[in-house]
Amino acid sequence: MLTETNLGHAAALWVGLHLLLLLVLALLVVRQRQKHKVALGDDGIPELAQAIRAQGNAVEYIPAALIGLVVLEVTGAPGVLVHIAGLVLFVGRLLHAIGLSNSGGVSMLRSAGAVLTWLAYIFIIASCLFFSIG
Image (cartoon, rainbow, N blue to C red; front, side, top):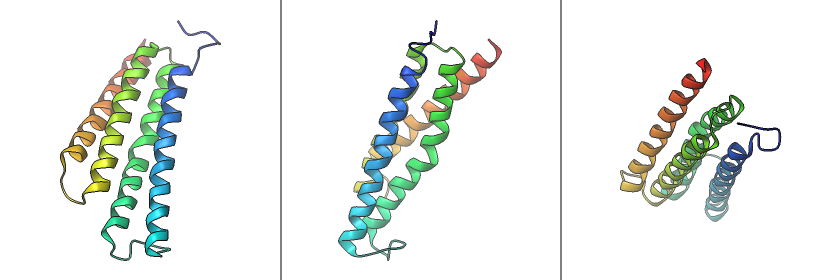
């Protein structure tokens, strides 16, 4: 049962960690831009393009999932469900970012990250639908 003192604590952890990941990815883009003196676009530089896509892909997936985590917590889902979804999403996003940052092509880390992200999405979707009728 949620109380006023613990409402949002599980979601707050995962929101904080995912925001930290987004910040790190943004800083990696800035570092590549400064290194290659590129202000806009990727100027055909593979390392910069990879950094931009790693950040962009995270921005495409993380916000909606975090909304789902917060909704789960607000609807009274057990904190353990929020933690499971948050952990799977975080590991997935981290693996994907590392895989994409190290290789512009197919990589095991990138693929594993994508699969974990989709599994987290499916878990969050199913949980939200379940708790919407409960």
